[in-house]
Length: 469
Image 1 (cartoon, one colour):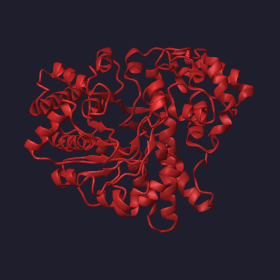
Image 2 (cartoon, one colour):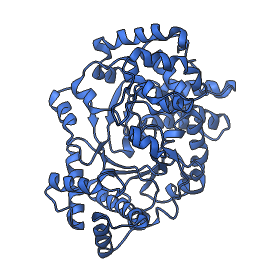
Image 3 (tube, one colour):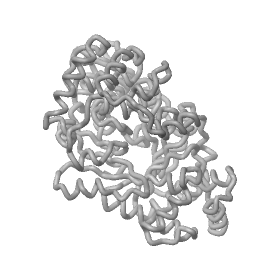
């Protein structure tokens, strides 16, 4: 492929498996990208303005990068990450880039290194390994290209062969950027997804005020349980008018609940008035996952559950820099007992699609694959976040295929905020899957014909079908 990315990267060293993987990969390498879940900024596509300097594009917003550098003693402010108090933060993109390049060795062996090498090579044509000695020349080469029309967001969207991409917006978002995309007449397909954490999680900052805003936006009485649920239904329908096919829920655990209407009303009142204790707040979050499942039966939105992250683990960093600054840590997660109330309520519904993710790999073969392998409503999302890596993707296939098969999974989604890395992430996932399929063929567990069919389905078809795109 290039000096940085070998054409056989991630394929087996065994000659027969490598040959089969090459053939499989060659048949899918140029398929369109379906990106059904992610966090790119819709304003990029709405305004179609040039991206900022290389540091602001590739380093400052990427928690994979700055968490590693922070672990090695690099202050976040030196990387351009602003503190909440407005104190001095490095604003010189070149200085930030130099600091990153001088420490690039810290990423050896990590997926971040692989993604970045892909981006530098395939998007910007860089053919030398980044380090302190070439930091300025690489910076200049990228900056020069970012100033060109062909490197604006819409042009890159088309160059990357993206068929559809989903962003993720909170329930209180007015979706104005999606409206601007629609009104612009541009043909790129950018849809939204409904993320109601701020009005579902009682521990979210400003929860009570958020419910007031939800009521104002919908004209519903969010001081009452029935009005609160009606407000969610209205917002979901509004999101659907901007292409939403899914909702997304980032709860700390997979706890669900299935209370009777009277119990749910009483719990809501305790939560609404700030009188609920920790156990009650957790039950409320769980009840809302079940309520969202019921709503999905009515409006067709796919229900994504992303549990198991202890978000903002450091209170000191949370207070100083705010949310999402690299201090989200995986936790042990129960699914069999935790999901039972939801599954009792809607798990047998053939027309419901609930996509489960995990940061607890020990649950793959013990819990998740057996659950998805029998409940019609359940599908397994791909290796996520800390496990969105070649090794993590391989482990996912090895630990889930024997029980859930391929067709109870949903292909790949990149779940990224870093727009230039999207083709890199999809290419890596396609290569890992092709290598896995090649092994099954070499072991006479699949025919080559089946492997070629599966390669296309894993790269393209399953995501379209699972997310109703």
